[in-house]
Image (cartoon, rainbow, N blue to C red; front, side):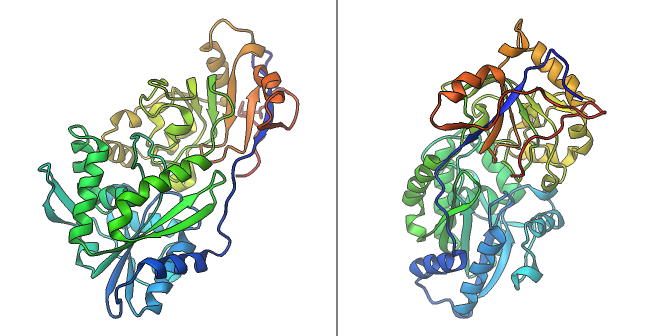
Length: 424
């Protein structure tokens, strides 16, 4: 069934981004670890950190770390390093890793999942520094994480190895403390302060930084010696930023997002993509793009009901509310100090009604003048549906490939959109 006449037509554009890629992951991981792991490891228990974000090839990368350590006659084990994710329970965090392909069976080593932490010191600012008890008891810690832009804080250091030592290994208790402290000190100061203490006191063996391209592929793995993490991570972040995707247009009346989830971004949808890093409902202080309203259609299965970040949308499908785990969502948002991220938008029984409302909220405009974009999620931006008002601009942009002409949206008998995106 075609859309009603008061909705804009949409056409598809294809974007092209830089695409460096590691093809021999095991060899790359082993080579980088061999370069930076210079101490004798025979008989030493080494904790390997694994987070909950949807890092590409995380199971293969983790297995390569396990195998490398075993070859050096070390005794590796895996520690879930994900703050309060997984419902802030040991069982929940182990389940999160299992969904990522990381388990005792697949890795061939123990997964030591616990929410217990040790107080290792007081930071120079006066707040307590916590670390996962299993990691604290290890002889060494191998910090593995992806380098990427943070969804709420900007600076030389955002999300990566240092944040893993701060929020990931701090578990729920540490994450809660640090997110509170960030209200008093800058994120940059807190992350540098805590990471320095963890490196000095917890036998950090090395860092293994994972860099991804715009296609959610492993672009590079970089081994970093502990004393070099603070100076190397800003350089790696700049490299990642140069590869990152973006929406094709800098301003829109509304954005349709097929799904959000913790495997997509810590805030469900990446604020760096939607222009809401500094404010939940508007682009401010130089943020781009400027999007007036966001409509979310569903949660990912992998997010397991955690709808953190849904509060940044003004509109959503009722299936989002039905799939949401309120406890997990609220716990995550409270721990992160982002309580508005759990607030609920207006929900709709079907897509057609939601989109009619979005057009109404766009002002006194004819449908063909309403500026809108439709994406799968904030990770997959290679192909995007855009409303017809962008058609001429897209044809004149050498960075965009126009795939088809504007055509009406299609809905099924229940009033929901017929999917036009290619699988991501």
